[in-house]
Length: 151
Image (cartoon, rainbow, N blue to C red; front, side, top):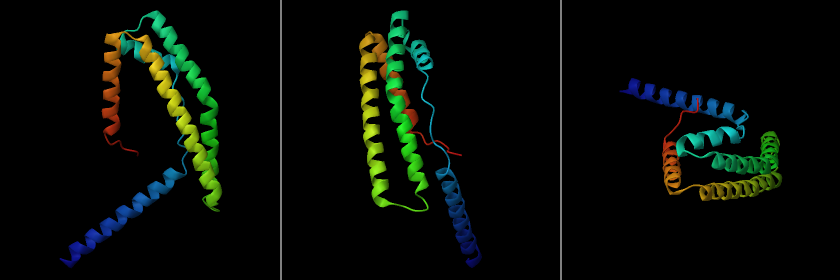
């Protein structure tokens, strides 16, 4: 009994150490994701929503405009995250809070921009295409609910 308890405890400690090591490693990694390509996004939508050429052109332009408007915000978030990462050795609570608040403001602006762009795209679609887009959105929401392996 004592032997099996020791094995369980040892296994738990080993698993905890492994998790901690992986977490520390992931904190030091660059988590920036490349911005989506408007042409690729439009092709995906066209394949699933049967867009006509006029819709494709309008949607691609909307996506390009939104992406160019977001480019400066994405770059600023990256530099703020770098600055936060650099504080690991000498943490300044006030400065870190200011960085985090600025990231929040930028993210709010980007979320609004995305919602606005999606609404503009939705207006370009007919009823059947809207239903298909809603179905794609539901599928995406389901995919986000599934746990994904990070390693």
